Length: 90
Image (tube, rainbow, N blue to C red; front, side, top):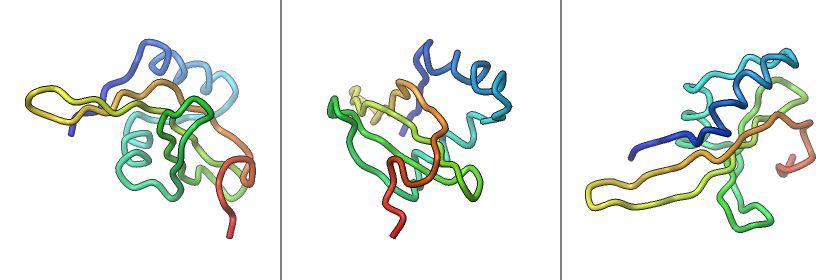
């Protein structure tokens, strides 16, 4: 499986860091491969979520694609949100 980032997703690292959130590519990849919660966005894209701290999650929006040799996950965007906004807290 191959994980690629759109230009927008790559720009989000700096945007979030300007707000005090240091999110790494490794954290995004871990969230995609082993999400604590997953689902679909309002537009039908996949979502994968994991904890950042006790009160916040990282939510990754992605598309799955295939080429002749491999499955590809294309990260469209990601953001930090308060717990309870997107994931089930049960």
